[in-house]
Image (tube, rainbow, N blue to C red; front, side, top):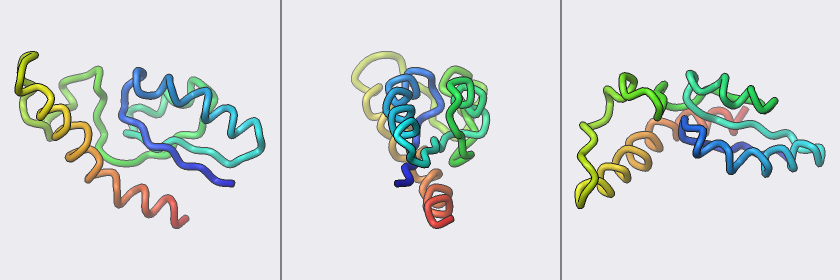
Length: 104
C-alpha cells in the first residue's frame, strides 16, 4: 500500500502523525508526508520521507505568513481566522501539488 499524509508545517501537527506513519512504514508500506518545503528538516528528523507541497511557510515563523490576513487577538474572530488560514488558504494551495504527487 502507498500512503500519503499532509500536515501543516508545525511540530504540533506532525508529532501525532509520527507513530502512524512509522507503523505503516515498518509494516512494509510506502509512506510519505507532504508539507511546506521549509518544514522538510522537521519531518526528516524522524527518519520519514518528506515531499514538498503547498505554500512555503512555517507556523513558528510569522515572517512567512505574508499570504494570510493578520492574526486577530484571542477572541470571537480567532476561530474564523484559523479556518481561513489552516483550511481554506493552505488546503487550496496544496491540492494541486498533492494530486500531482498522488498521480506519480
